[in-house]
Image (cartoon, rainbow, N blue to C red; front, top):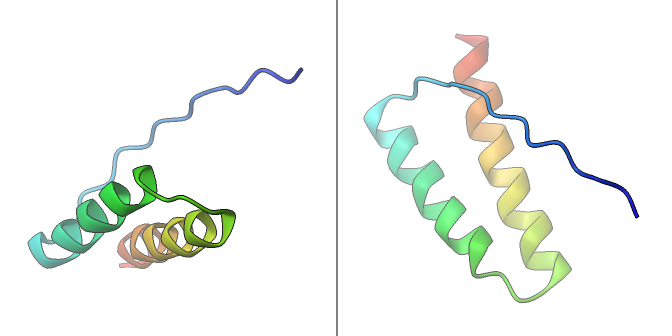
Length: 54
């Protein structure tokens, strides 16, 4: 069985993006299906990638 390494990144987000990302992270933790997991994971990664481009 593979061991997962936890990678933590530090990202500074504007308040409105932080609120969205936090909301999606909460939904991600409560997701019941792979489709939901994928959807919320992609939403959070897009917010983070957008903030790193600035």
